[in-house]
Length: 319
Image 1 (cartoon, rainbow, N blue to C red):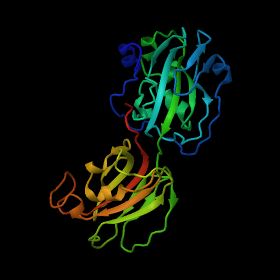
Image 2 (tube, one colour):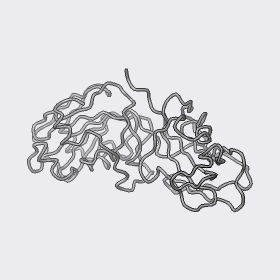
Image 3 (tube, one colour):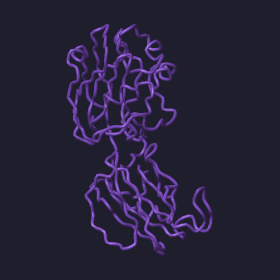
């Protein structure tokens, strides 16, 4: 980050934790290039995406409600969930003076993954970025109703003054597996059902589990292959064979960054070679799971069942 560290803390640009999903979003995308031309015509943004933007604001800029403009429209993945992993740069400007208040580093490091929900001091960003796409630069006029309590005063804004954000969306991970459905035959294996947002549910059949590891690709994605060299971002739901409730799921919070050496062997084998956009079902016998040791809500000797959505692969940190 640049500018004054205290300003960054006040404006909430420092990520201190994950807040989870605060509002339901629709996965059906319909987005205007400009939401309010009367407001956005008072903000001029130039410069190359990925570099600090040159921003001129007709001051004092007043905004009674949220307004945005897609200055550059990318053709990548769309943001359809506020917990969706993203890599972005952001600059914040005072609508009262046009002064730059805070900005990120603009150093090309794609390993700094966050999500829209992490910017809790700017609830208006959720609406402004809904259906914005990877590769876009979005200019946003945040009214004071779009800011958390106290932020406007701490930013030095008078009544009605807007806070202006310019956001470059460098990378947007998938919100759920989007690959092609695959035919699988396998009598006596779990069934996966999906909610409209892609969240899976598992139906475990009666009877004994398979004795060997079973991996089925339910959706085949067309993205990068998981090699284990870099962390992979996934959503997963895990159930113990014979139980009706999940013992763990990421769908209630944020997708998880995983390395293959940090998960049980059966989970790692299911992920290795999978492609981004895929959904994988894996049934893990005890000898490739937690064995004869109990683990939190998992009894000793359990067969584990996971549904894994492969959402993206993290970049290596910039040197």
